Length: 406
Image (cartoon, rainbow, N blue to C red; front, side):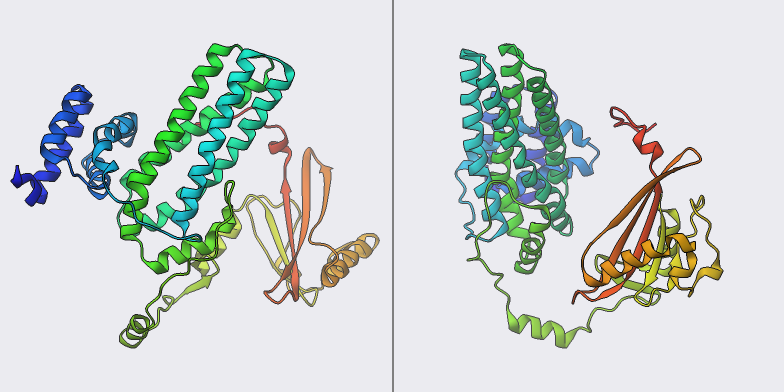
């Protein structure tokens, strides 16, 4: 079968056909035997590219998700024989793997707590079981870092199919987490439904760990540059970690000669004309104006000299504003009996005594929430005050959940 090994196209088509056979209902053992005979050394990269190709050809991600565990079962023997790239403490993949080891122990402890509760369903064993479920939920940070850090960088390399499938499985796990918490919160629970629900949850988490270790991480290490891993590392703390803290041994290995050559051969990146660079993106003036006037809140900015410099002209302002207020001192924009409160807020902001001041009033059937925030630059210098006003009566009236678009 050398043609399948030496020719990438037939090899890929054979892999795709085997997956389609699975979806068509062909027995897993039969597919595994053919796979072993034809393509027993398929790599993690090929499996990932395979799923992405199927999505590109129109196979829904939901269908791939349904048989994702079957796919891995077919390819597991091949994957288990492949060496996995080594990392050191501090590298994002090392941290992901450390979290996987930790959550494995959490799952073991949760299963033990479940067994004890089934043997002796008392308030104490129920409380222990609830505590273990709460501890398991910390693992959410692991999935959030995958979804909001690792996946975006992989997508820059046109690697998106397996990411979409994994995210769908994350949501299944989240649903089971919530169902398990709700079941335990209701009080004494029958053993059978509790064991069934936990069994589904544990299996999904452990299978996802295997997919990460055998497919996702090797592909990510193959595709992402040291600079990209460094960027991921720099942003991880924004989301946080589950059970572990990253080490400091790993540092991106950057080639200064390559950086010098790139700088010499290509001009520095510039922002297109009419676009303003911001901390997390770049927008045109039109986009900024549309954004501010579309926000479901009214915004007013007062500079460090106490002058009104801007207000958002939203469709339904809660309090009247006119252009005449621009460059007016904010103290003059309030009735005399409330000026002392305005001044107190500004003084406290300047002195660093507070980071927010908020009020709420009921007016004409509205419940108006008013908040003031100091603006400080990177050096901590006071640069002005932001007022944010919102009618939260509709929000206070919400009950239950709505997960579908009306």
